[in-house]
Amino acid sequence: MNKSQFRSPLYPYLLLLPQLSIVVIFFYWPAAEAIRSSFYLEDPFGFSSTFVGFDNFEDMVSRSDYVASARFTIIFSVLVTFFSLAAALLLAVTADRVIKGASTYKTLLMWVYAIAPPVAGLIGIMLFDNLVGPIAEFFRSFGWDFKLGVNRFDTAFAMITVSIWKQIPVNFIFFLSGLQGIPKSVQEAAAIDCASSTRRFWTITFPLLAPTGFFLLIINITYSLFDTFGVIDVVLKGEPGNNPVTLVYKVFLDGFRGGDLGGSSAQSVILMVLVLILTVFQFRLIERRVHYN
Image (cartoon, rainbow, N blue to C red; front, side, top):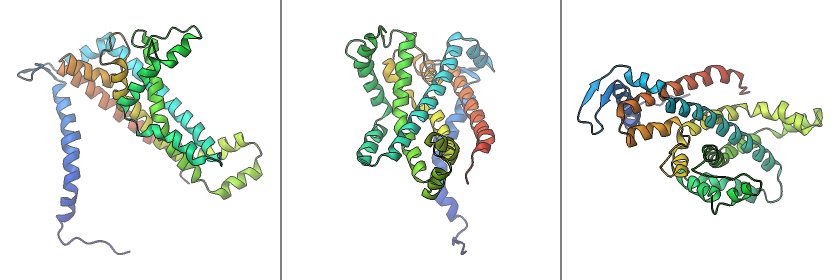
């Protein structure tokens, strides 16, 4: 194999410089600034700051609203990740078996992928609206007086449902590609050995989808933690009140609405540490159970 040779040893570094600059400016610099600010009590306008050590962290973990947001974030992430993956896998298996109208069926399932999170949140408001929302009207026919933005459980239900709906098309595309990548010879051999389609799925198809499922697990956890900000903000209409919020949204509330830059930075640092631990856990423990061959 012939190796590519550069005329100047600096040329590869010049090619990497734009990407490295973006990473440093938009990722490492803000992260370093957040760590620095977490140890200071700062003026909301940035005119002065006082070093307070770990006081921002101690104040954060002792606040009941922060603990409630952390608890809701865990529940929110688990439900959004599980149901968006489960629904997408069910739809992908169904689409993989469809013969007539397959393109139309797949297109109808994928089109939500093109919708931005704030637009998805706006559609969710229209569907769950207390007065004119068809879903709220459907719930009332069963005696459930659905109150979006007023009742804490109802608002959380709407946020979780819209977030799941927004993420299903992404998972569907990857699961369908993974299913269509399984060799026909393997499927035919499995059909000869086992007549039950359900048993064939769990013993043959599902293990072969493990790499795709592991990748989507990481993507979905990241989505539920960070990318649902637009959905939550629109559903809450910018005024959370007593409704539940995720940790990312609480960083925004305390930092930009409350002017508590030090406390908001401390929350950001805790969030970064949690994501780092989660990533190490996923790659060190879960990936060992994934079969790539």
